[in-house]
Length: 117
Image (cartoon, rainbow, N blue to C red; front, side, top):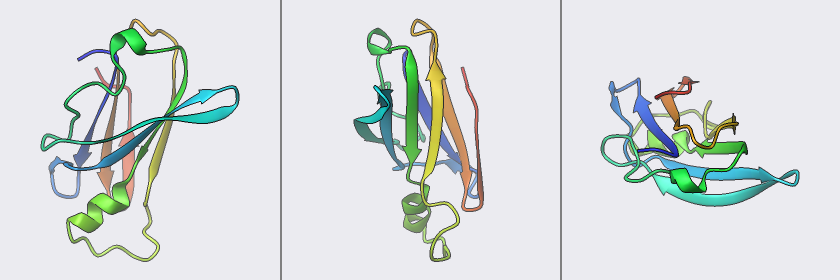
């Protein structure tokens, strides 16, 4: 895949995180513009890029991962409110010809994000 992609790994269960809801936004004229909502597949990935390579624009993006919903679906006993309900990841794309991959590693108590390949 090229363009903008992501995947989610569940560190607490040692497996891909399936059926995680992800919202995508783009910062335009100082306002966040909603682009789309997607869900991860059984491999914790998406079936297609969030944004295909020919539609990627230079700018600031935000992915919002709904991890609280995911962990509740796994019958994890979360506190109320959950420590992590939504994980926002804000990042910039400077070179729209490059592949940008944004993986997220999650547990009910923490997360890690990085630019993958």
